[in-house]
Figure 1 (tube, one colour):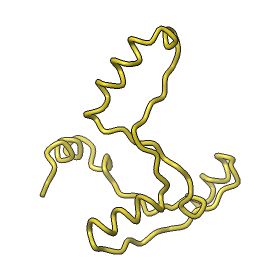
Figure 2 (cartoon, one colour):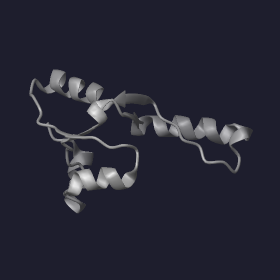
Figure 3 (cartoon, helix red, strand yellow):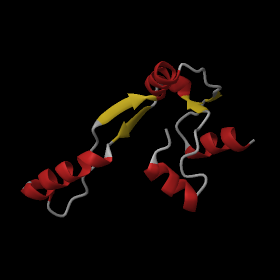
Length: 101
């Protein structure tokens, strides 16, 4: 089933939702996610809290590793996915070198 919002996004930028095959550091790197439906709740709480005045606030609903995401995708789709392992030592330079060489 096509998702209208993704169809709109890919209409102006075909690479917007491009699946990545790169798995960093064995898939144990954590990523944060927020559902668009939760953003209003977060903003309301942030604005109401005086401690956040003139501060940057990073908020998220879920924290998953790439391995967690791949497991979930396999369970939902029933498919296996090709991956490209990428190791980096923490420096951006070594990560980019691994990707583009």
